Image (cartoon, rainbow, N blue to C red; front, side):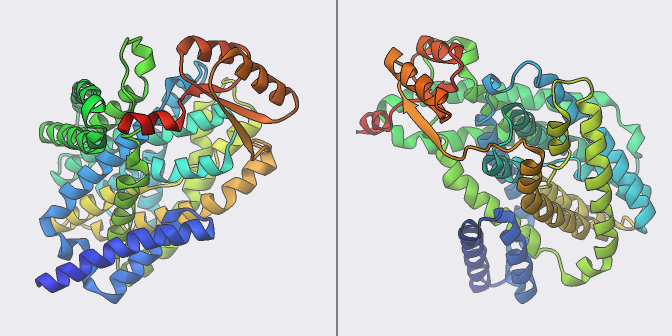
Length: 466
């Protein structure tokens, strides 16, 4: 490609990435519902946005770094305080059971529907075990289901991505090398998770010390410093073990988001690091979805459309309900809550990224049937996001698990009179949430039955920067 073609391609990708999200907000639909068609149409109109043409060998490393940054930001929002003891085992089972049931179920269905080898079928199954915070979290924020349901689905959506990605890498390597899916040892999987976790903990310690110093002197450098350490951790982990960087990024985010568990005297303010969500992370999500959609041709989609939609039906109507039924067996979740959880499993950016990487690599190796991987996953992503995005709010209201009160009064401060005000409003039927600074005030508010989180007045942040 010429420099002019590259310039046009980069500019178009960025315009579509941001413009599609602005349009999605205006239409009140998930951003991916607009991003995927925009990228697909752009790929038809011009080859300049095709990632293989635009970025070449830089594409896959860029995807790894971008997904790592996205998962770090998602990990920051995972608070163990919002995951009650009875929810944590359910989350573990949702991830573990979901990976097994989905992989085997998808592989079996693909073998029956598609003309592909057993190895390619298992690669598709491994790719589609992931869900994704980029799709799940916005839907949960809009629906506002019961707290324990929201907590379980949030943790599942974030944790299944790095674990599923590593699982997918192992299955892919087994198929691409001809070793067979059943020939790799579980120790390989566990070692990859261990490497990612170790690097993630080390990165969190480094970032904690760095941000503590930056907040005193150069608070505006907090986002850049965070980006530097996250990328360093992702790169270091991936150089040791493939896709261990996703685990490292998630662990870093969870560690920094749960500093209260360490009982440390000096905690760092991660509010500036959360600027990722509104700036860099949103841009990366848009760019990745546009480029992935642009790499699929209409002919590829037509060739697998009917079989891919049948696969979606199996995943939505059989595999997800089976996973939730097994994971929530004898748990504290009601039948209505379990029903809603069974209707919430959209696929997102990690599935698309791994499909793009694995599909192209298998095609280069001449593996029979590998050309169906990317278009099939593309259809599954789009179909599940549209289906759940449009129907999940209706299902939540029908089952009675959606929050009925849409307006919430926020009380900033933890003094006794603030708690009395909050209790009076709550007794009057008004939804109340408190932002409390001191741990003892926060504990007193929670003991009174109020929803109280750590927070401070916005003017504090302004004063700190000033």
